[in-house]
Image (cartoon, rainbow, N blue to C red; front, side):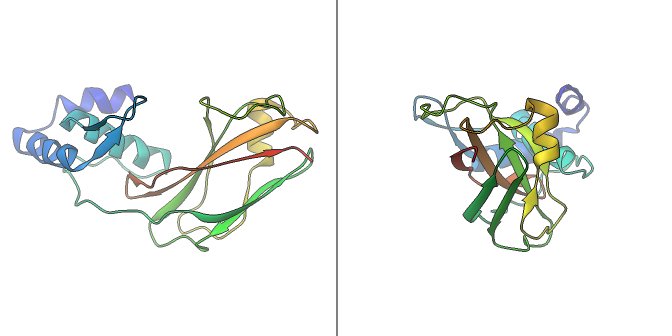
Length: 172
């Protein structure tokens, strides 16, 4: 992240102007529900951080805006020995990745989660299901029966991300 932030300073004025224009087209909502537009450097870092997460190269010129497909109908298999996620569309469209974020294991009575951490990114245009037990276990340990885990799914296409799809389930 800091590399992209520092790289912003080396862009040409015309490139910065392109990113500023892209930022004005990118609307986000803060924790109070208020909408705001990204600044040029924020748009540059968002797109390039997402590209790096997916194994793509950093770009200097602002791309045309695209809207990635939204993930629908997730089916989660979650046990102490399995963590897989079936989803639609499958396979993902060309140049699109599925990114999985998850929470640490929580009390089964918990209803809200704000601590999502990166777990795994699918192959480009990957097909369902996404198997992630190894990656989850490496980060948080073996899922314990009865604990609740929260998941957030995002599609990323050429650096642009879809809205998150959040789901939760008890470990069976």
